[in-house]
Length: 429
Image 1 (cartoon, rainbow, N blue to C red):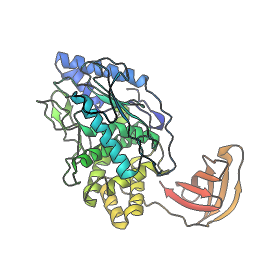
Image 2 (tube, rainbow, N blue to C red):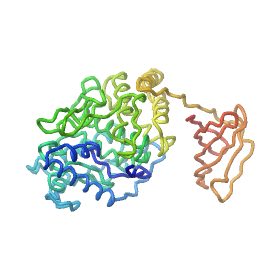
Image 3 (cartoon, rainbow, N blue to C red):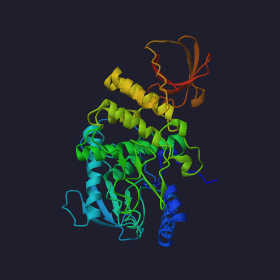
């Protein structure tokens, strides 16, 4: 059994090339291709062990981003593995003449623009974080990744993979791992890890669609189009529209992504199949976006972004949890018809949305108790029966608690928020 890296708080060194592709190449490629894949796998392992941890705090909700701070810094590693390397292009400077440098510069800018112009987010941390990238990393390195502080791009080997700056959605994908780490902090394993990957695919695709001015109907919904070298039987790394169809080649294998929960892959590799099972929420987003119509970054993207920032979304969220919240947020943002479209999208991939329960204000709080020990703070409330409300994170100042609620009758857990004696809402998982 392969070791799974759990990566708490969404922190991961997340490469765009899934390990199952590199492992397949290391077994089935030519001698030089096998050696290159093994070198990339070894380097990926080394990079994960050296991941840079950033103090990116999770915001309480959608924040005002203030004055935008777009500051791109592009470095070259000159075919070494030293980061960040030598600075070759800074914000506002003209084209360098190196296609990889200039593609990285434009891709980082397009990602910043999507997040700021559409969602009001001021860079990855919502506080104007510099966007740093290093190109020409390693010798024909077959990957691109976010290491917690910056983007890194390999040049590819030219026989299986082209240069990794060729696909603008790859940049959006990898930078979104930073956004997820700063917001929901989805753990990088099993279903929360697959959600982490899917969210990166969603916003990576939206970066591409917005930069090309494409509607949901016009988009190709491919992730990494252009990355596969000439002669490889495939169109991209993944297809959000048709998971499992992106490639089928004797050198890289067949796309293993499922498009429905009935085909969910239980595996111990790839951190529990994070790059594989992400096909299911990917398909749900595609279905929702095309049903809602227009520009996918507008309605559908805003629903997914609001869900990413939703304080009810835990770091260990399952597909069901995420589906429930997207439906609730769709209703809040765009009304019942949008909610219906989102509910149908999830149903079509095998997940039936459970309605989010909403408690009215001024429910009776019968008694409260707070001790120095957070887990001993509780309140009894009355709403169709008795419930014990046990806090997870009382702040001790404003008396606003994030709570775990257990209903005695059904033993179902919900998240709730209490401000003094007012019950704001509850979420049924």
